[in-house]
Image 1 (tube, rainbow, N blue to C red):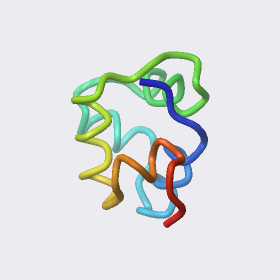
Image 2 (image 1 turned 45 degrees about the horizontal axis):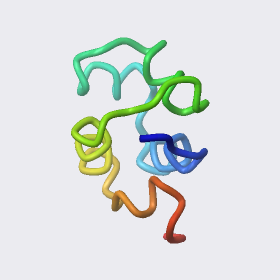
Image 3 (image 1 turned 90 degrees about the vertical axis):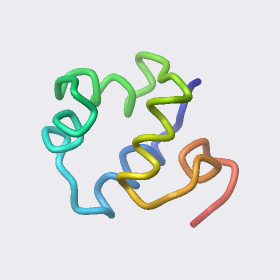
Length: 67
């Protein structure tokens, strides 16, 4: 699943650093950066987990709706 820059925007609006997101996701900061820049696809399961952390919907992360 490929996401646009809403992934990064949602993280920043939630006041969460890439390092904090990485810890929550049990991965590393480089992986979070790759997802945010669209350099690597993210699985639906991981996207759901990030949406929950950031307090947004999957539709928002996917750029289908504006918050």
